[in-house]
Length: 328
Image 1 (cartoon, rainbow, N blue to C red):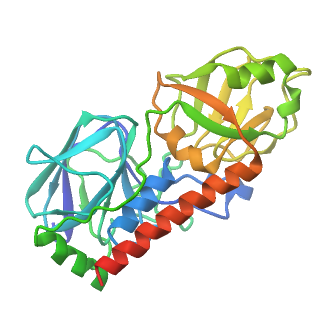
Image 2: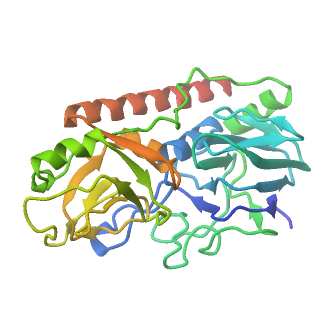
């Protein structure tokens, strides 16, 4: 088909188009959605000169095969899978030239769970409430509101900018663009949190146990939330509260003492105590955990969480600025 960029020859069990999510609708009960690991999605776009809010391909750790129908500049970020071109390893976290009629395979496993693939020019996709993210619950946005499947065709959204054309020329010459970027470590178990609004409903012994013991991501986890098994936590009072605002990273404690961490497609209000909040800098790390993985919560201050977030933002801005300097 004219304008096609990628023909999907094999697809994993949950591969979708996701951007940075839909903003301004949570007061109406609409979840933010978007990429589970927003940092990786944004970085993939930055590496190839896209607007950072462009939709990217979010794959989960299962075999994929993509046939590229035209010369393309792509970037892979995140984890879970190692991309290969003609059995040659493609480096993550750098822009890469993919010649027309090439086949990219994702089959070798890496630490992490979600790999992101951005293509220069972006993917043509459906918009829903000002976002191109796939919203599976209402079957809207992304690629016809559903996960991708074998034989799907992905089209290019926009023509290449001058910066992207220059980057394409640089990469076609055989040059590589390697960045001095601190690549995330997804095999860590540490997830840093701040105290939640209802932290004090926990008994003193449970407050200690919460950060002293490991929890395991349950098989009943998905894009809406991660269910965690592990140490039983006890409260000073009944566990139910009046439904109150929650967001991605909110840690709730159910009456059965089960922990739920809300993720990208999580609800906007909840009636369980909010005992913790994953700091923004560590949500990408948590998003790369899969069922069976262990996590260990580490309590930090609000100021420390803000400093970690700002440090990440500075590092990503340096990447964006460097790509523009190279391609200008």
